[in-house]
Image (cartoon, rainbow, N blue to C red; front, side):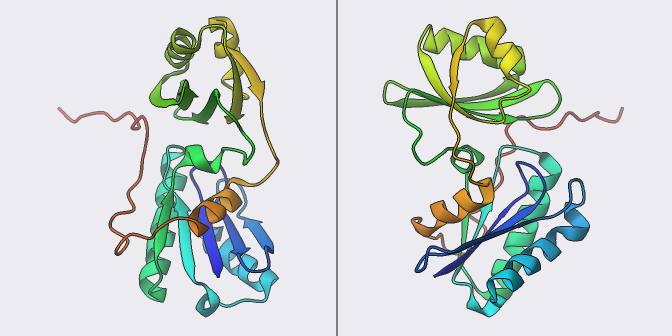
Length: 215
């Protein structure tokens, strides 16, 4: 089966193809901040690189968030439109799963950047799972309160969040395998059970963007 996965929540809109029979993969990304105009070209480039056509696809997948608000909406719209046009099942995959390396073990923390000064995290500890989207310092304090001095395997968008975790005394051991998030989305979709139609695939915006209410 040939799976096309789209990710716009975690960076430039990226298209990944996975051939589940041969194990072959192809990944193409649009230029940063140009997902709206170039996103479909990234999809076309991935198909051309693989020597495939849209008619060869067996399944579609998309990252549903949390993550960048605009990129998430664009990728989800592209994915739903393609699913409708091609009559294919669409699988929604959490950003947390898209950022989790295959060999990552618990206790584990996966982080996603939100708006400026905010973040979303998933903490797996003691066989349970908790999630929080809030200001970076609040997230760090929350993780510290739950993990204490436990060393956490950590993945995701850590660069801008590490100082807050250090201030809170959270102990992290970065974990990565170098695989693009869109490709992990495709791998997750290969094992998923599709929903009926595409309306069950909904975005997880994490912390909603700030808005001003008119007076």
